[in-house]
Amino acid sequence: MTQRTRTLRNAALLGVSTALLAATAPVTASAATGGPPGTEPLAWTACEGATVDPRQRCATLQVPMDYSDPGGPRIDIAVSRIPAEDPHARRGSLLLIAGGPGGSSLNDPSGKGRKLPRDVRDTHDLIGFAPRGLAPSTPVDCGLEHADLATSRLRPWPAPDGSVDANMVTARRVADACARNGGELIRHLSTANEARDIDRLRAALGERKISAWGVSYGTYVGAVYAQLFPHRTDRIVLDSLDDPDPARVNRAWLAGHEQGVEDTFPHFAAWASRPGNPDRLAHRAADVRPLFLRLAARLDREPIPWPGANPEELTGNVLRQTMLDSLAAPSRYPTLAKLMRAARQGTVPPAPQAPPETVLQNVTAVGAGTLCNDVAWPKSAAEYQEDVTESRAEYPLTAGMPRNAMLCAAWPYPPREAPVRITGRGPSNVLLVQNERDVNTPLSGALKMREALGRRAVMVTVDSTGHDAYLANGNACGDHVVSHFLATGQRPDADTYCD
Image (cartoon, rainbow, N blue to C red; front, top):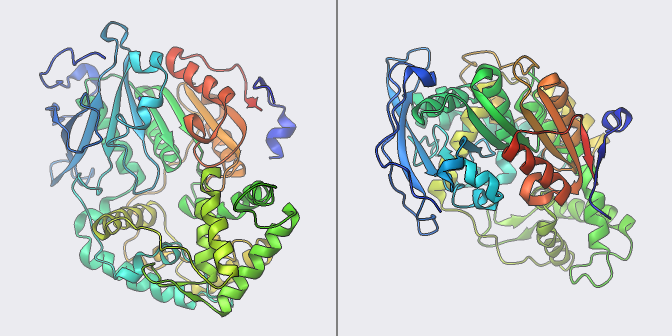
């Protein structure tokens, strides 16, 4: 279909980062940039890593561990930069905000930032960073047992009979380990503190205002930054949107997977039944869903040993977790199909390669601290059980997981502040981009971010499938709208649909 842009009707809405640095001296933050007292200049040095663009330089920013005690202990935030390619056209800095929590954009100026069109790279320094707690920033670690690093445990799938009892036991064990091994820093991981770190970074860069491209969880970080520091924002792109519900925050993100799977699974089923597909699962798309449900139920009863994996057997919940991971991009569909084809024969493919355990420990601790410190989670097993039972009946593909008890159900620390409520107060300089079919951040939740931002935002909805839209799983029309905004500051006059 021809790519084009048209105004999105209200009914449809409801239904649904070659020039060298100009100078090598550190940038000095001044009162003119709105820098807080004590903001230190950045001293740029060579970055580590074989895949890093040689133009990328790195620095360390020191920020307060506890913003309520700004004179207290400080922590390091690792920062990177590739300067604007046309110094004469330079407008400012474009901050790349990764997803997660637990994701890093430190090497994104050398990676995804290079996909940006030339007129954006000419006018903006590309800035990356490792959020607080995430190495090579000052790191945290919960010291978890190896088995507790399995995704199907960290993302809490109920037992085959729907019970959450084992999940509550796991939550207590993991939360206790984080409290025992995470140190003081784990208590100060939060989205609001990450936003405050970003403002320290903005000042250290010498910028009065900063632009940003936030993806997935990075959309919530970007929205919180724009709420806390509205007049420090230039051009803000939020890509693949989290529901900003101030009462539930990350609980709402997790719950959104129910609808995200329902929105996306039919696209997978059509692919998995296509003639000529070497990973074809069925002759008709309508047969793929019942096939998946039968196979998951069989693996609930009869797991298949899977040496080298974590856990070391293929269970129904491991299959379900693989589905959730694979639906994030059509390029991942073969992973799920190959696993289903093997399991039907009583075999397994080679075990997936996991990141080094030190990395998993660090990423897990950052995610745990942020998710559990942002908002208070219920402590009652009965409340989770009721929600899981209802979810299993309405959304059998996800088997109750999206409403289940994470480790936050046993988190020993109350939130240090209330969640930030996203509103429409501030400059109208936000562009939202969202795929219609997104398993991780579904359109239904994205529309809630759109509603919360009100007059500050314009939204482009893209007829595409996958998580991360701009320059990833979107389409040429949506990419053009976002690129044009970053390069010129011009947005569509109204919410827009790209088919």
